[in-house]
Amino acid sequence: MGATTVSIDPANMKWVGEDIVLAMFGWTDTALNNYRNRVWMQGKHYRRIGTSGEASLKKAKIVYNIPEINKWIDSYPQH
Image (cartoon, rainbow, N blue to C red; front, side, top):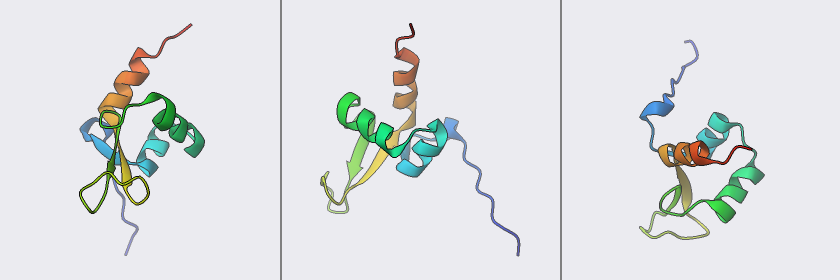
C-alpha cells in the first residue's frame, strides 16, 4: 500500500489546530504564543475547546480562526 496524501485547502477552513497554523504561516511556537497572548482576541482569533464544554486554561485544545487571522494580517500596518 502507498502512502496516504492529505490535501488541505485553507480557503475552506475556519477553525484549525496549532500544527496547521504553524505550517500555513511559517511561524514559530513562540511567535504563535505571543500573538495569542498579546494581540489576538479569544473567541475571535482563537478558542479554547475543552471536553467539559468549558474553556479550561490547562487542558483545552486551542483552535485558530484562519479567516480572522488573515483579516488581521491584511490590516497589519506596513511602513
